[in-house]
Length: 99
Image: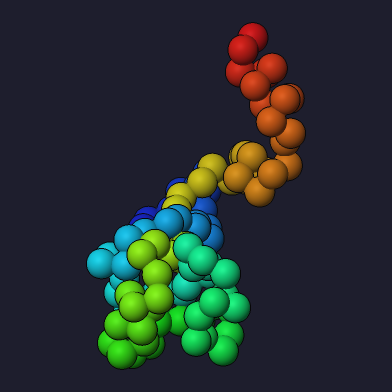
């Protein structure tokens, strides 16, 4: 998608991790963690891209749920990018919003 950005917003990439059922796996996803220790599987590496349908089938045989990392584009205000990047502590953020 192309966004027309004003001087007050910018597009950034955000990494997002979520647990998914193995039926939801798709090519291009990055597997971060399985629902069991890596040592109990036949995988040689801890973390990998799903680049073949056969690999998706292998993951489905080994696990029921996996943690995948996705990258998403989002628009943020140029005036407050530090909130997204952890520039404010949770306590100070909540105390300011409670006022």
